[in-house]
Image (tube, rainbow, N blue to C red):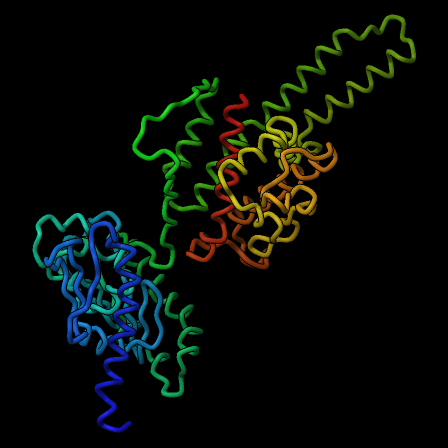
Length: 431
């Protein structure tokens, strides 16, 4: 490159960097309160109070650029370069009062509170910057407004990342190997020192922000539930942070009512049996007796009334198609996910999805034939049950894949998590 072109090239690089940072910082610094601008020489980025000349934050784009040049692949919490990688962590319980954990042995590095790696901090500002620390109208150093429990991990002897022939896509393929080092390190620190750092590969899903009721009084059409236990399962799910554990707690609500349905059937059978007269031993009466006897055997014998059957029973007979569909449509959930496999598990697609989907409204039909409604409920039950099993059963060599708590799987579960939450609540109000 001609030396006269270098200033223009650098200007283009800084302009690209500004655009990237503008997008990331705008997610944190809301437009209603802040504006993001660059200096006249385009070498600095300012986060400025709206309608003011006060810069809350000033960043040197040249410094960030020089540091980012060393990064060959990255995501929100991980930066990989030749022979090294950095990763963002938070001390979950804020229990570690020191500033540095020295790492030696299989790999060498440190986990420290000194935030020298500015580029990785700016890759995920929402994770790193604590807005509650901005309490005065003044310019802050970025170090002053980071979360107190934020740490940066560094492994600086990752030889497998030191191959000169590696391309950017090659580095991406090596991320699982990097993850293995991080997970091993965090597990050992947690066990040996009782210091729990968050898993950077399992960031929790953001809570759903419901804007339907802004700044006004809310009203509840209160319905009392007669059972305390399933309410506690539901509340535990609401408070749980990890999506797969939330799913299991919502499932516990459904599971709680399995025997309710069975006991109702048994009670019905017993009432009929009492009316059976055996004295005359007519063919009709004897036939009726054996009919009820076989029904008793079915409902009392767990081998003949599997958990999956009981789940289908409460979804199809207790909650019913119309209420499920009405609730899905009211919550503005795009039902398309029901027409697709989840976690590549066989038989999780709702086979008659096209029969219950209204192409005009892009919602599920409120009514269908009894046969179609029954099939939808049965296949929905099967999907829920198979997801539950996929989360619970983690025997590596018995399954083609197992559920691991990472961001990819959390995201894949998000729609089904909304669905089982709806069904669990419908079950509560049914009883």
